[in-house]
Length: 203
Ligand code: CO
Image (cartoon, rainbow, N blue to C red; front, side, top):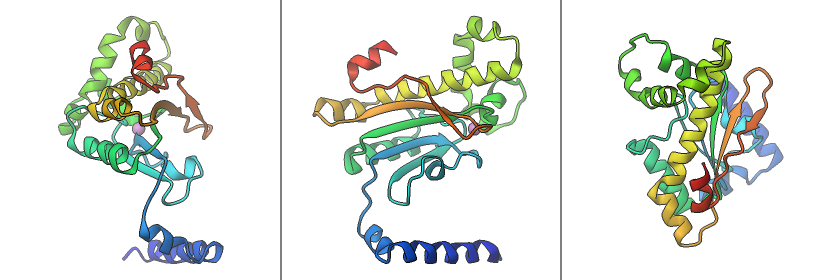
């Protein structure tokens, strides 16, 4: 079962060891990534690969439509561990154009549980009706919603009590918002970086 994947795995581990015989032994001892990535589960947006980071260099949380819901225990556990224990310096919320989760949130079809998960996106959609309705092209409208969603999730992360407490005790930490283009492979910085509580007020 899955023999091709296991063969790939062995070949990969061999390559890593050829480059650096101590690579896995060192990582086994501890991880010390500087970045937390909050991204979409979409298979076309592989976190480490896009930004050229090796195992041990990126702490990753992924879910449908890269949400940071203030009541989600999974996301909050990742966030607290990243901020309080690993002490990452950057948290990057990464959306992507052409996101199926974003489209599903507003197409009016019922799918079940995921409709609840995607509810925050419908709220963002409703709040930005005039701007979004002014975009005639449906695909471009959804891409704009991807950007608005990233901005909102940056706000969620930066408002979180774990992040606020980290700033209060003088920890260096910034929250960034990017949108990745499936068509070009390039990330677009949305220029919504929050480095302290004053930046958050400007969002
Ligand atoms: Co997506």
